[in-house]
Image (cartoon, rainbow, N blue to C red):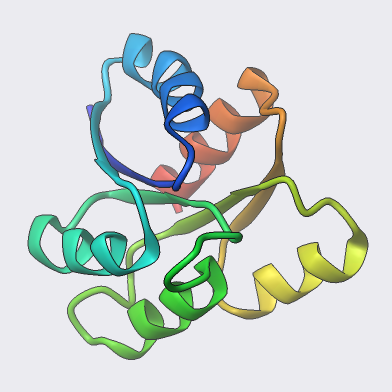
Length: 121
């Protein structure tokens, strides 16, 4: 099906998301911080990126802005998957160029629907 890159500094969160995505037949790639996520996006060109926001070296907002400015990655749909759940964070995430915003703990149905929508768009 699709190649999906998960960028998250929490191994537990990454594992939980993989358990939702892989059974759907998607290939899952992972990056454990913003910097490696940026590099992985440029080298692997995933179909969708699931991006955490709070990461130690480079936050998800910054990574998303950098991906949007790069002609080789600007068209890759990004879905924020974060513990930050207030309306400001959601609006700011979408303003940075994300196509959807999912809060943790992740509802599998919501995540799969967001991925499906991103892939069809």
